[in-house]
Each structure stands twice: as C-alpha cells, then as structure tokens.
Length: 496
Image (cartoon, rainbow, N blue to C red; front, side, top):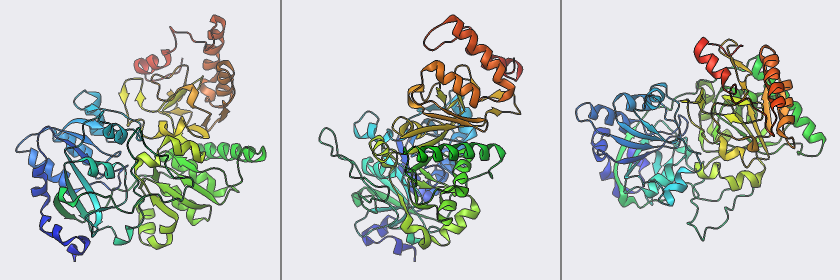
C-alpha cells in the first residue's frame, strides 16, 4: 500500500529507514529542509539525525522555508547540530541559542533566500530533505501542507531525501502550483495576474537520479496555538473595518476590497476574524500562511479564494478542513514562497498587507524582530516583502504589553525593520493612524492621538513637544530617544 505513493517503480529500491537516510547528512553540510510555519516539515530524518549526533557530533547549516513544527528546532538546537540557521524561526530554545551567539542566525525577507541561492550569493544546499504526499511517474515530488522553499532546495541540491507522510491524504495532489522563475538577465515577467491563476506544475520537477533515500512516515503537523479574539483584537479589527468602509466610500477600494495578506500569529489572525461580521464579501487572499481565519471566512461565504505557501491550523480547524478537503480544494492554492511573497506580484495585485509589530515609534518606523533592540524574537518573515509593495501597508499591535509595563508605541524604535517610508497605516485597540501623505511631525500627532495608550499619552506628548522645540524635520531628543527602553531594563517598566 505504501509503495503506491511512489509511482516511479524504479525508486522503490530507494526506500529505507530514517536512520539509514540521515547517514547521507555529513558534518559541515548545508541542508535544505521543507517546512513553512510549522507545516509540511520533514519529521523522521531530523529526529534520527538528532539521535545519531549523540554518538557522533556534527554541525550543519540549516535552511528552511520558515519555522519548523514538532519541536524540531528545539531538538536540533539541544543536540548541538546547528551552526547556522536561516531564514526564520519561532522556537524558544533556538531563540536563546541565537541570542547567546551559539547559533548564527541569518534573518531574511522570505522571498529572498531562494533568489540568493539562484544567484550563488548563498551556498547551494548539499542535500535537501523534503516531505511529500507522493512521488509521480516522472519522479517529481508532490508536497504536503507547505511549499515554502522546498521546490528550489530539491532542484539545487546534489542529493534529495524524500519523506512520504502517509498521514496526509493523496487528495492533496493538485493543490500546489510550482513555478520557478527563469534566470537573470533574461527572466520573463511572472505571468500571475489574478489570485487564482495557476502558472506552474502540481509537483516539484527534479531528476529522480538525485533521490538517494525515501522514508515513510505517519506523523501530523504541529497544530497552531491560536487564541480566541479578545476585546483588544476586536477593537483593532473594528478600526480596520471602519477604515476599509471609508476607503470604499471614497472610491479608493472596491466593495470586495483588494486581496488580503495577514501575518502569522494571534493578533493578525484575530483581526482577519473581524471581517466575519463586516459587510464585505467576495474577497480573496494572497498571503503566506493560510490560518484558521482563512477557513472561517470561506465557510462564512466571505472569501472565495485563498493563495498561500502553507496551511497552519488549530486542531479543530485542521480536522474540519482535512476531513473534507474536497469542499475547499477548488478555493485554495499553495505556491513557493518566492512567488507568494514576490514584490512584483504584491504590487501588481494591490495587496492589503496586515502584519504585526513588536513596537512602532511616533514617526511610523516599525520593529518586528528585536526586543529592546538586541534580542531576536522570530525574524522579519515576509512582512517586508509585502509592506514595501502593498497597496496598504498596515501594522497592528496592542498598545501595551506586560500588564501595562511596556508601551508598544515608543519615541524611537530600538530596531528598525520597516522604515516610515514603508508604512501606511498603524492600528492599536486605541485607534487608527492614517499616515499617507503626512510629514513626520504630522505623523507623530496622528500616532500619539490615535494609537498610544492613555497611560503613556501625556509622557509621549511631552517628549514630542520638547523634541519639536529643539527642531528638525524629524524631531528627536537623542539623549532621551531610547530612555523608555533603558527604564524598562532597569526598572521593569517604561512608565516615567
């Protein structure tokens, strides 16, 4: 029964255990693994590798699409396997190793990793480990619940290990759209002009001679830990819906809006949930991760099509979607992340990009990655791919954190991921600041009045007024600009 998943019979002889397959991974290799935001990662071979290095330590340079599920980043870190890691992660153990300097982490825009590999700015993977639902008659790989960077890893690598996960239904085949751009300088424009366009193949085209091992597995993806919307996220969603309503009224948006993109995590997912009770219908989504909110909107008849690079769901939503995949399949497509996040397409389609900020400042600069300017959280992910090119670049966050000891709006961000030039709209539960067409001083007034929590508003206004007295196009008190962060580290609170 398992061998039916390998439709090229000459590959049957390549079936082996995970322990045998992991022997192909040697010290110093660059390894490309499937997996994008806890979906579609190879599962058995990494675990077998962890067990192997307990006896014979090695180091690898690991590339993925984004974060791995099933605590694999934790296991790989604890085993001492990781010398370098890119381009995104969410694991607390790995995060500590990165911030301690034990693992060199390269934080990248998610659309750029494969492009830099293609142009030999990064070392090509020696070996790729890819989860699949099947292998076709041509020896091509049918991915599972994510595409991420898997296609290019498999194409670029000298050797390929495939994990066929029989837990995934064969009906996943046909969900994917694998398109690989041609090489510069003769590259053609990407022929995607509508969210539901299909421009590639349904499997990853590789030379089957590169396949050195095939491992059968039967293990689920990690479920997302989505929290229910709360009063604050409902407030953020309400402000955004009101903004969209006014944009439609002014003729700047169609009644079905523009294609939506939402960053990962509770806040962005909850904000998308806010569209359930809006008047907007016939919507589309062009995003990276298709989360619970995507399928809630589909089930409510609000969303007619969603394009992404992975599907990451809570356990109840996972059971509902994959228990009745036929209901959703004609409304979905999964693409390589260099296509889902491609700046040309983001600008062409006029994406409404909604991403989450750790903090932003009074002029609209956004920090998505570093706590107090130095400690990496997860990574920039795809937010920069979308923000610079979106029709609306929107960043959302709750106005305070840690029981009010942290203000998410600060005089100057401690680390800049998105400059004021790439940010159109900022939203907290307090309100919405529309920054389009405003000079820095005008931006500051909008942000202070609409986004700052009342507990910090007088303190922020005092800073801004004194900075304006000192002068400048973008007024700052350089001796005080990071005083809020310093006070937080010294006293545990930003309050003055």
